[in-house]
Length: 479
Image (cartoon, rainbow, N blue to C red; front, side):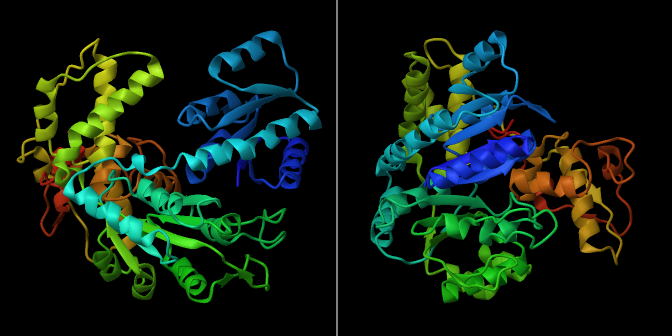
């Protein structure tokens, strides 16, 4: 089902667009800021965005940066008082069209009615060629996908970050009898714990403060299709109980409702953590794990697919040449260097590396592999004093701030070291009431303070002491 994102502080226009989308049989979400819109594009990529020109936190044209990641996404700019310069600028930045308020019903319907065809064409492009590689590990994975896809079995994808778990989930959906129905991914670590139940199961109007309309959750919007629960270990334990009930009974209820609804959805879950460790830490319920672990699939890391590295590198370069109309080449001399690298960030890291090399090179790609970090990095000297009796919440807070200090404030590196997603890190920082490090914050732990070892202190985990320093601090593609 095509999805519509509406970004506007004007409730009249927002409600009008939402109602038209509903009449056309499309799902839609209304937000009032660029920040919320960016989160929504991550949770569920829209096929079209209607955005106001002026918002409280910036211009709606800023969403064109998100839409550029997908040729399927269209951006329509809404203007209360359009002028020639604004329209030209919108088109120059990539907007498909503009609308003048009050909105023209016929033009809105024209855009929405073109979406089903576009969405169908996109779904037909989910071909197995997206999972590239002919190594033994990939052949085994391909065979397992071929066998489980036609069934209704719940699949649990296990693999390191960057191995392509969502691509595998999409391939299972594409080869299943549900391939004509929606495939909806949801990052369980990217949604606030206060909102995730509403996002997954939906809510009724008036069920809580701010619930001014009925909201359909992912289980309803994915009806007949596949729901991909990425980073399922990040789901609050209290919600895991309700997810388990849905998996066992096939029914659920919206928040504020007493009516059971049927969940005709296939579940594919994924995690980059060790499930047994997550269970031991109390982050994953054992009964839910057994319910999800009907058909586990391990996604091989790139280091176990050495034969595929050249194929993938040349494929990524061909994509860039096609997009930019160039004919840059990857010399044979570079292949050996690329194959010899460990690629701790897996396929995502390789892709970023090829992109960066493409930008920095002329006709022939000049491959410059960075030196790995020495194992005896100064990080091994860092310790963090944790008095006995400190609450787990405070330990979590101190460790996150310490890791941010170690990484110089680079959130992507900090998230890698902590073993959590970037979205989860942002959510934690938002909960702590801080988005950027502030030297006058007494909770902020500086590198200088961390270097001081005190009696009874506990050493930071090995991820921070240099054992894996080359993975995050010096890994390719982590900016």
